[in-house]
Image 1 (cartoon, one colour):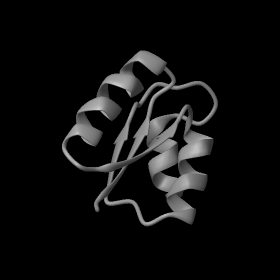
Image 2: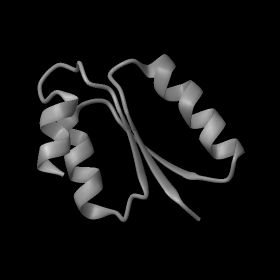
Image 3: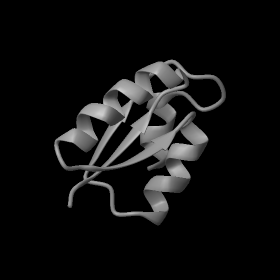
Image 4: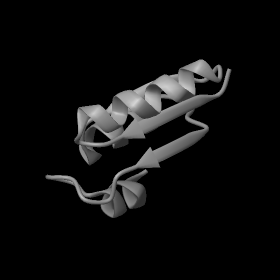
Length: 67
């Protein structure tokens, strides 16, 4: 099963993306900010990351560089 990481500080956006991904057979991980996304990506084999750019703390561009 392919794994997707959804990173967004808005719960509503995460929920919609998660619903579509799970419906299509993906295992979904969620993160609310860039720091969480780095930790999840480093500890799991993620096939695709859907990342918000503007988030408090560590923004999407910086998180991608860390990952």
